[in-house]
Image (cartoon, rainbow, N blue to C red; front, top):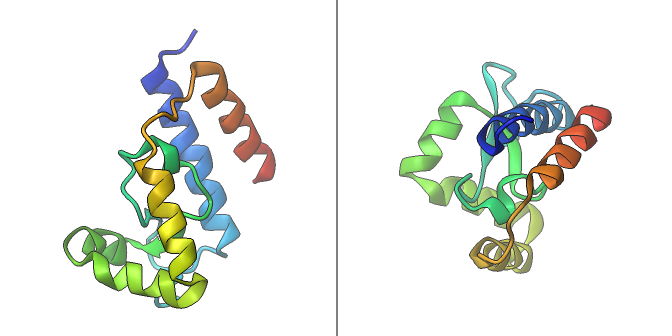
Length: 117
């Protein structure tokens, strides 16, 4: 049986591939198709929102890296697109540290995103 970190890597790949395909391999901020990545509005370290479709969008690699130092650009884009309430809801979800995925949960998510792709 695969370790939890190995399963998380597989899920990250399946989820990231799904996100990029969902967004047409175009950066949601500028529209470029150059170096698409799966950019997390709220950091990947928050497992409660790490694989949340409302938290992750296709970003060109430069925007994804820039977000680390100037997060307000991505946050403002999100609020303009989805509204402050949705952003606050996502922040509340990220702050919920009671969410913990078991290995079977992670495998199920991985299979779900492989199927969705």
